[in-house]
Structures are given as structure tokens and as C-alpha cells.
Amino acid sequence: MNSPARKKRTTTAALLSAALLGTLVTGCGGDASAGDATHVTVTVGYQSKTINTVTAGTLLRSLGYLERELEAQGKRDGITYKVEWQDYATGAPITAQMTAGKIDIGSMGDFPLLINAARGKQLNRPTRLVSVTGYNLRGALNTVVTAPQSKLASLKDLKGRTVSTSVGSAADGTLVRALQEAGLDPDEDIRKLNQQPSVGASALQAGSADALSQFVAWPGLLAFQGRAKALYDGAELNLPTFHGVTVRKDFAEQRPKVLDAFLAAQIDATRYLNDHPVQAAEKVAEATGLPPEVVYLYNGSGGIATFDPAVRPDLVAALKKDVPVLRSAKLVGDVDVDSFVDDSAIKRVYGGEYAERLAATPDPSRSEVWLKGEDRTRAFDSPFALLEFVAGHRDQVRAAYVPDATTGTRWYADKAVWVRDGKELSPFVTASAARAYAEAHPGARTVSYSAALGQAS
Image (cartoon, rainbow, N blue to C red; front, side, top):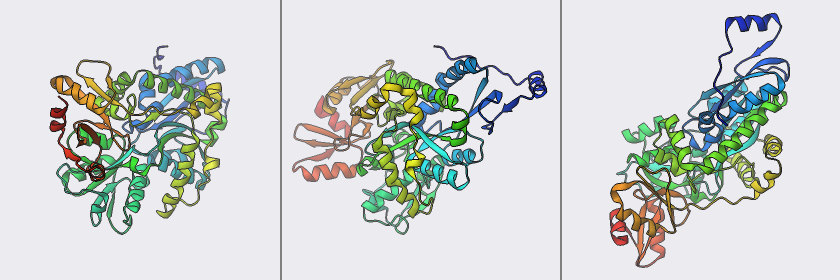
């Protein structure tokens, strides 16, 4: 169905009429009780460039599915609904607006979700996690990058260095955990800059930061632009990371039909993304200004992110493991994850399909080529087969993607670190992973992308 045209209903006459009739007009997430308003504004906070949330934000807005659902709901209950979209760079301001009663529904990463839960309880504005947007079961949505010419070879080399991140974000959590696994103290061994992603990217380029730890789509964007290279792949943690949808508890109780409409629209947006990955990437690119090739790295078929609104138990378990990290950073106290997570609405909206979605296995990443002028990608059985194809179509390639040989994380073929082992060619996101593989396979050695293409041609 086509999205309904947006209709302005806030004329002076309409407002005067509403006032005379004693009708309550709700705006910007007001706290009206369910059923006592004929004009309701639903305020949605989202992060347009955090493309792991597009099915609850950028893509959902572009498709108009929420407006469609609310128009249909409005015809049934006699209410005129309007959606107000508020765009932010991170989850923190969304939480601030939710606890102020000014945003009804928001989407953010796992660490910000826990802060959302903690702040909501602290300020007597409780929130609930009601669905998931995108996830990666190994943690590959967060990456630490350095400048292209940096001599830093591993996380251990960050000791005494300056690292930019957004404190309290999922990327910050990855940085903390990764440093600990590398034997470094996140508080003592590095100088951490708390910066917005765009500011951190500028700091990296200017040399005021030695490394940048960020979430989608910043690492992929900077690598694509030749402004950074991957130092650490978050998938090495082998711990799920995800983004999800949170709603104010009072709003969910007052407006359950609105929440159901949102989740139904999110499910439809998810289906669209999964059925039309290239077209979805292009829509998100148009709305955000991000290159489509970067969006597809994460959101494409077999991309870094898997999209499904179902609240998987393994994601909830990972969320519980995040609490101690945030608590040690003094960003939260204890968080009751079980009371924060409420999948009753998404389960109701999904119906009998919900159990199937919970049991679904994410598709593995695969080797793909996107040729110029084509509206689909071509899949290959192996990175070597992809290289063979690219070698014969060099001037036609728009983007080529390969899965890391160890973690499975998708990366750009021309930005990957390649290892030749006899006739085999294996790609890796980071030089340290390639080096570890080569050391474990006598005779293997790293080769340039051009050399890999030459061997495959």
C-alpha cells in the first residue's frame, strides 16, 4: 500500500473548535490518558545515521509505514494521529527527552538502552525495551579504527594513546572490553575523549586522537572514504551487540494500539529491507547522505547487521552482561533487565510467527559484488571466486564485499588485509587478525589487494 499523504490539521479554526469542545490536543509526547484525545501526536526519537536502527527510524520514516498504520488505526478509533520524527546522533539525548515526557518511542544501542532503563527508573519515568532493530551475534557492529598511515598494529599499542569514543555507547563498551582482554586498563592506560561520532572522526583525521571506537556506520564510512583503517573488529569479542526500541511505560499503557501500530510498521519495514536490500540501502543513503555502498556493508543481504524485531533470549543475556561494564564506569547502578525487557507487544503483533523468528539463524555473510548501474548484487561461493570476477570487471565494480576468514565480519574487499596460503586467498578486517592467521599457517603471508587480484586472474 502506498504511504498516505501528510495532512496539516493544526489550523486556527481546528484548534479553536477543539478548545470549545474540551478536546485535549496531545503534542510532543504529552501524557494524555488513552482514549481522551481526538488529535494525538506520536513523537519518535531516532538516529538517522546509526543505520542499525533504520527499521525503527530512517527507513521506516522513508517508507511511510507508521503513518499508514496510524491512519488505519485512526479510522477505527476516531483519532487523528500525527507522527513527529526527532533525529539525534546518539541515544543519550533520546533518553533525556523520553524521561522529560517529550519522546514516546526511541531506538538506540544496547548500552544506551541500559542507561535509558536506569534513568527512567531513577526519574520515575520507566521505559521498556519492546523490540530489536538490528543485531550481530559476535559484536561486529562496533569497530576501533586508526588513521590510514598509523603504525599502531594492535590494541596493545594503544597504551598511552588518545582514543575517541562516545562514553556510554555500545562502541565504548566494546572498547572497554577489548582493552581489558588485551591486558590494558581502560581507565588508566589510555586517554579517552568523550566525543560525538562526527567530532571523533575529525579528531582522528586531525591527529588529536590516535584511534576511534565507534558504532555503525562510522567505521565503515571512514574506511570507505580512505580516512581510516580497522584496528580491532568487535566480532573478536564474540559477544552479541544490538540496537532496539524503547517506549515510555506510561505511553505504552495509555496508547497500546499506537505501540502495536509502530511495531507492525517496523515488521513491515524489516521485511522490505530483507526482501529489497539494495533498494533499502539506496533509500537510507538518500535520507542520510551516507554512500549506498557503506549502508549496504551493514544492512545488505548477509551484511554485518541482521534485522529482526524479535527479542531474542541471547540478546537479552548479552544485555545482562553489559550491566557490570556500565556500573564499573559509574554510568548506572543495578539495572533489572528482566523488568525492562517486555516482548509482549511484539509477540502479540507477530502472532504465531514469533516463535519462528526467535529460532531463526542469521544468514552468514557472503562474498558479493555490486556493479555500477545494477540494482542487485552478485554473490560468490568464496572470496577467491569474487576476486576472479573483480579481476575481469575492474572498471565496472561499484563495491565488493568479503567475509573475514575468522569472524565472518563483512568488509570491503579492497580494504581487507589478504593472506596468501598456497593457492588460497583469505581476507581479514584487521592486520592483527591476518598476522595471527599467517603465524598459525607456516608459509602463509600477507599480500596486497592488487596482488590478490593478480593471483586470482
